[in-house]
Image 1 (cartoon, rainbow, N blue to C red):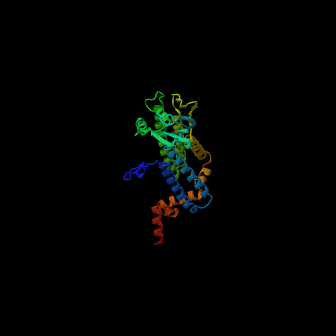
Image 2: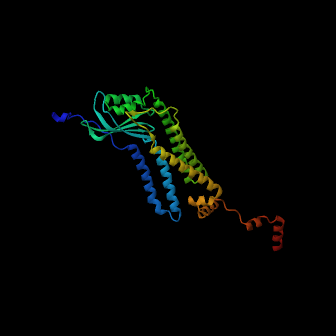
Image 3: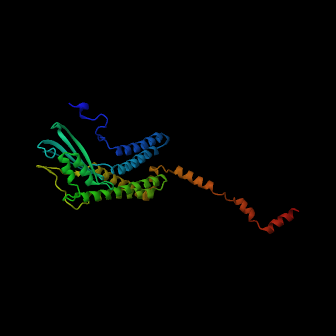
Length: 326
């Protein structure tokens, strides 16, 4: 036993990683706050349009939250494997662990959890992130992991995605992720435009922009899956780590199909049954008549027919009437 339990009293200890993604928490809190605000003003809307208005708000916020959140998630591809493997380099210790690989648009997460967690006098519970975004250097992150002395399974999986790896997985995943992220940002912009058009309301163009949002979201999935190299095998003895499409991929697909159906529905109803579409958007006939009255009240008043008849009387007849009176 050493003084201060082997630590220096005047220096901070090792920082621990926060167990929750703060970016996703911020996005969720913002959209939930907007939803709560709309729910508060919901009782002020009367009639049967209250339900349609609430559904439009929920669907619009859901689409925007999904498009923005999947930019920062790390489960576009996921995979797990349980294996007996060496724990660290230059060590003969063999541990039973669960190795997880989580691929997102900004990088790779490698998870290592022991079975049980406490083995070889250590707590085996790691979650390391290696970024490949525009401002990040993946090889540098991997080098820092080597300097920190991370466990061998984490370094083995992370090495498969380096630029020097013969698997050539780095460029394929990085380029496809960049194009996917760019397409999703475009989808977020078209979603904002569709919300503005629906609130004006310009229903036909709003439906077209919602349809364009769906096309961009589905195109982002094509960019993410467009890789022309075979997956490099990640083997831990007889066990192999394989990845499948994760929750973010399927959530983006479902949201894109939902936008596609909504956009087509708005366009078809606008051309075939516009009255029902106006009912969904609370544009009933009463509001249209009020708008027409308001437009007419703003126009200058036209002269009456009696005044026009007086002005159209010939001047000669007017003089004759005057002479008769005299």
